[in-house]
Amino acid sequence: MPRRCKTGQFAKKASVFGMNFHIMTLFPEMVMSGLSTSITGRAMEKGLISIDAVNIRDYSEEKHRHVDDAPYGGGAGMVMQAGPVCSCYEDLCRKLGKRPRVLYMTPQGKVFRQAIARELAEEEDLVFLCGHYEGIDERALEEIVTDYLSIGDYVLTGGELPAMVMIDCIARLVPGVLSNDSSAEIESFHDNLLEYPQYTRPEVFHGRAVPEVLLSGHHRNIEEWRRRQSIRRTFERRPDLLEEANLSRKEREYLAELRSGGEPCSDGPDPDSGTEGKGL
Ligand code: ADE
Image (cartoon, rainbow, N blue to C red; front, side, top):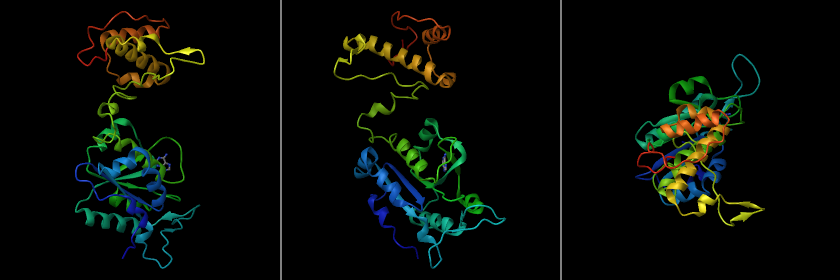
């Protein structure tokens, strides 16, 4: 019988309306201490999400609780064994009464993006499988993994940090997790554009003044300025995103001027901008 995972006790009982994240890991303290603070921690306290970390080692049938062994065929490092990983998942399924999607954290996976986060946020339960050493026995992956995900083209020592990154990103999309309901909408990657620059007091800092339009109280002009800043910033920093950006006719003209190296000037509200008040 598996021993109880004390660190998993941080987590509240599975929430009724929100999302339940289950992390299969050899380092439950690591993920729970990171995710129990700040916004995800508060969301757990409010019962909007639940996060529980299950220690794969608890499912070792070995006296010394080993969960890894040398690779068949030779080579460096150790491989996590299929038995404890599969038993851990099966036990979770028994407790939940269902078989949730299993996301395996690996640099060989599809690169995690905001669109994937949005899709995963629709699920009620998600299982994050974190590997270590030289990876996990392929047979366990074949049996339980539904999605192979990476956080970028670099190699980390384990899947815990990627799981924390993804959980943070998905959790903030759960209704009620962010204090301002709309702030998950108006931000970087909304409409495939980067967010406009933000300013707060004082009005002048080290000789740099806040852009005058932001002090004007003229909401339409402010929206127009912000939208242009978003387009300009995306053009300068992440031009690849513009391929799929949703731009009005006037915004496309603005972008064309940016591309031609000109310095486009603001020339009034965009008749194309629709009712969202976000247009130029
Ligand atoms: N495990 C090790 N490196 C990783 C990465 N870049 N993304 C996801 N999981 C990983």
